[in-house]
Amino acid sequence: MDKIAFLFAGQGSQYPGMGKELYEGSQKAREVFDTAERLLPGIIERCFFGTKEELSVTVNTQPCLYTLDYACAAALSEIGIRADFVAGFSLGELAAVAYSGMISFESGIRLVSERARLMHKCSGENPGAMIAVLGLDAEKVKSICEEFERVYAVNFNCPGQTVVAAGCEELSRFTDRVSESKGKAIRLPVSGGFHSPFMDKAAAEFSDVLRDCSFCDPSVPVYSNVTALPYSSDPKDLLCRQIKSPVLWQKTVENMISDGCTVFIEAGAGRVLSGLVKKISGAVTVCNVEDIESLKIAADVLGGKSNA
Image 1 (cartoon, helix red, strand yellow):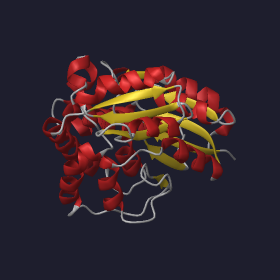
Image 2 (cartoon, one colour):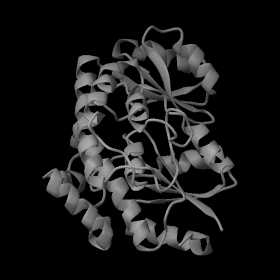
Image 3 (cartoon, helix red, strand yellow):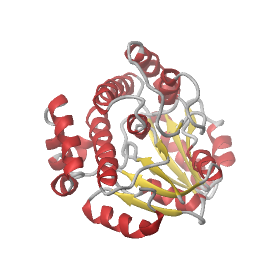
């Protein structure tokens, strides 16, 4: 029987109208959104009708994406598709943690709201940006970063794609160096230099938020962005470190494959993670779920692969 992984989308994948069709077509997804609305009034309005600019503000982006991520997983469960492994990209890791039962969805809403608030505040105090570098291997990107005082390689996504966090004052010179090295630099729609020393203060303050939070054992393995391995130590420490540490995404996917995963389903907005998995391995089945149409396609693609 095939082993299925759910991959929960992260910040940068948001778009206006996300989740609306899923809300209208899936009872379980609707229940997730309604619960989120009760806890964070206005979140449905932001997801379904918010502008691109509004959704790009971290304090809005993270709770909205967390809710959609979890709603997509709920819709999958509703049709009998469940995960054997889970991982989430950056913010998506909190959705993975909630899906695994380590915390409740409601506790996750509180945590993601505080995480977003702290990261937004930290971004204002220590401004930065994120740039995807395409066409260069990770070692080359790291060597270019070392030429600058405040540029860090932070997301190791797949072969030929590494994301950096950079101080705004060094953006232009860094992109020039990427071009000189025959690479391509694309600025990402996020509002800070995440997963880098720009977020040290946010990570420290998030530890205070987590101090009174209780975690249960996960029902399925949850792979950490920090280690690329299943959680086996203090989840509070890993969740704090994750805010300021690189995302080892390529290694995470490779480890999931080594551990027996043959099917990857991206749960959440867009298809970014699906594309990354395809570039990491051509030997696995990959699909995404973000609305009713993609939910139906995923069900058809899986067919006999379902672990229900």
